[in-house]
Length: 478
Image (cartoon, rainbow, N blue to C red):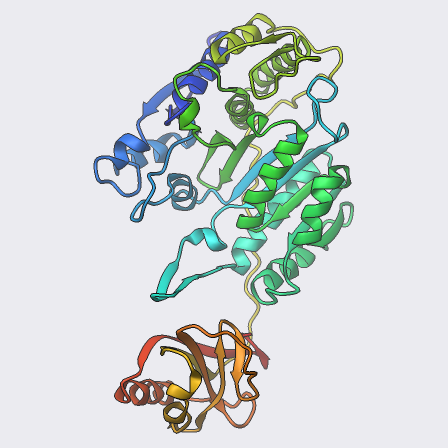
């Protein structure tokens, strides 16, 4: 019986990408995977054709048609005008869940954490990775941290479903909601709401700084960690490194309309063409792909062969140790060793067992947004003016619009009026808050426009305006 081949899209990438992809595809082929490969070109060559995204528009049709993408690392050119292709693909295709297993292979690979076995599940579409940035003035750059209720619920629910499917007993969330009370506060709030639906799974919250310290020191405390995008990106690399090497880290990017599989490391152009790179990260990502498409038997065979190869001390330079390793090999030699061990199981490390089936994706359940009363109560108008405050304060103080009056001025988030202190260092962007004298009193859009016009008529540069709202009487602003 001839098994149907699953079509996948493959990109060899940049830097070390072509080498580790060749090694990975060789192992997949020799292990008997049933894949129909459609190769595409992305990255440096496409960027060089003045395509700022690094991907040809026609390539989207292939990704949309076949839905499964195995991608080697790519290089994003330095300088302005070029977007991260990884971020572009994840957000455009809706690949909201990034899954990064971080496992110790002690005693075969040296680590201070022999019992480490955790999974970082990272939100993949929001947070600072939206890339929404502005030069507000010559001296001030701003980035928007965007956290949404539906985006948070999708990734948090995925983390609990992942734990349920893989027999994990605890899910932990990291946030910084003691400072970022609205954005990280929303992520934490949604976590608590979703966690209540999974009473059989322990849930806990850590502030990200002490959580990161505990992760680096005692990773055995964690099983599944779910985080917003930036924290997840940074700390999954930390977790991979302390487990043995970033070079061993594979990842899956899962969404409702497809999936992308890749190593967590970059393209390492300085190592390109030298046959030294470790293909393990991309290989392990490809095993997550095989499980996803229902070829778990092949994934299990390759995974055990890979573990056997590590046990035999056949190591690439990044994990080679004089006292433990038996041979330092190149990229292709490592692949050949894995192929030679197909059908074998490790004796020191725990053999893996893949459950049959595929597509470990559960369509996200998104709860309807709660109804609330939203009231416009004022605005923050950001202006450009050189310090000190006395240069423009007399003008700003006189401005009113309907029942709106100036109630506060801050600089870099620090209150400088009223009750400012002379030691506060100021730059050339100021936040001027206009609200009604009566707390939470509704105001009109025409009043806000009136304020902006009056500021502009005085020759003061307006950088931006942010409307201030309350939601069921609670302020939606800091």
